[in-house]
Length: 312
Picture 1 (cartoon, helix red, strand yellow):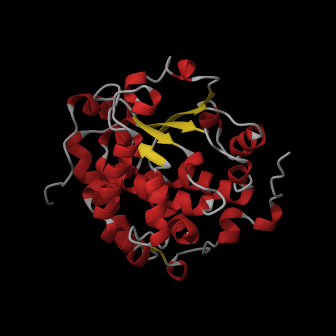
Picture 2 (picture 1 turned 135 degrees about the vertical axis):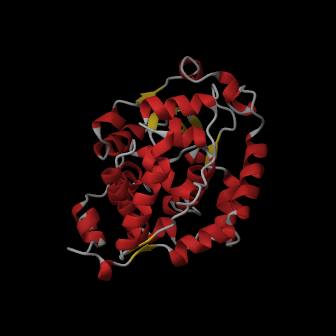
C-alpha cells in the first residue's frame, strides 16, 4: 500500500474526527483502499480517487463504508442528472464571471475556534433577479462548495453554518424559488454532499418570505428543520454567531465583502481546469449501472407534479 496523501488535521479537528466521526488514524489507509477497490468495480461511476477527496466522504459518513459508497454514487448521479448546476462551470464564461463578482455565497475566513464549523455568508439579494436565474447563481455556489470540500478541514470535519442575509431580496428573487428546483437542491445537499450542516441563520427577512420558507422546510429532513433559525435583528444572531467573525459591513473584523469576493474570485479561477474536468470527465454512465438505471424522473419525480409556488 502506498502512503496516504491526506492533509494532517490540527489537534482540535483531530480530536473531533476521533470522537465524532469515528476516525481511527491507523485504519484510514485501509478504508481509502476499500473505497478505491469498490470504485474500480463500479463501472458506471467515473469518480475522482485521490485520497483527500475520498476521505471527505468517509468523514462525512462517520466511516461507514456502506454509507460512503452510497453517498459517492449519489454524488456523481445527481451531478450528472442536474446539469443546470454542474455543467458549463467555466470561470471565464462571461455570465459565470459576472455572478462570481456578486459574491452571493462567501465562506468567511475566520472560525470561532481552530475546531469550529466554517461560516458561509449567503446573500441572495446580491444578484439582479431580472438578469440572472437562481440556477445560474447556485451553479457558482456549487463551485465554491467543491473547493471547500477539497481545502477546508474545518468544514469537512466540523461542518458548516449558513448565514442567509435576505436584504435586497425582491419579489423577482422569490418567484424563482420553485418546488422542482428546491427538491433538486435538497437532494444534492442531504443525500450526496458529505458535509454536516450545523445550522441556517436567516436575517433581514422580506415580506412574502414565509411561503418560500415553508417550501424549503417541506424538503428538509427533521434534523435540518431543527437547525433553522430566524432572527429579527443582527443582535439576536450575534448571541450565537460572534460579531467579530463577520465582514466589515456587519460591524465584524474579517475585512470587507469586496475583499472577500476578490479573494474568492482568484481562487475560483485557479480551479478552472478542475471545473472543466468535472463537466467532461466525471459522472455516471447509466448504461453501465447494474440494476435499474436512474433518470431525472425516477430521482426527482415528474416536474409537472409540483405545483408552482404562487406568492401573494
